[in-house]
Image (cartoon, rainbow, N blue to C red; front, top):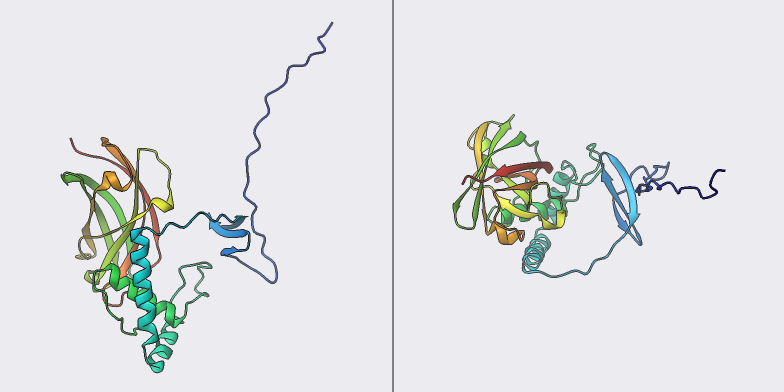
Length: 257
């Protein structure tokens, strides 16, 4: 006689799927947050999730950023009206850093001015930018080359860079948002830290170096033979203060013994 007790089969966990945003006649795309919802893009698709509001901690780095932003806004208000109108015209040529990325979304003259102001600050040359057209950026790519520790607590990262389609590659410098992890560690955008290239590109093909001081303390890491790295890098124009679109990059490296 068969037992009436049936063996319970283990249930396969149901994957948690993020609701995808469905375009409509009125709204073709969405980005940002409103009320209790947040729209974001991943893999070329738009998703929606519950909005989270973690407590905002005003760290020294954030306070410094806010001070720079306030100075940029104050400088914009001091610009003659004719100059502001000129910035507005140039803003129509600039591509937005938020979707859609089809050259249909642009920014205001104020945003372009503030972006240039921040760009010059990042380059260590803070000053009021001059209104200039937003021209095309060069074709740019980086590939990790090597890593070493030239001094205790200091990490030196080297990349082979390609900067094509321009007669003056030396005007462009690279800003990298970097996160170091244990090998195989995951990406956490809140852990990204800005690292500026030591110098501009020297030609169409050049070696670009990034010096990362206190790299163990920055990401609360132990001394290991190697690390994983997540980064986003961007091209900065040293003549205009403008910046190109971010590019994502991930790599791992071992340190020489």
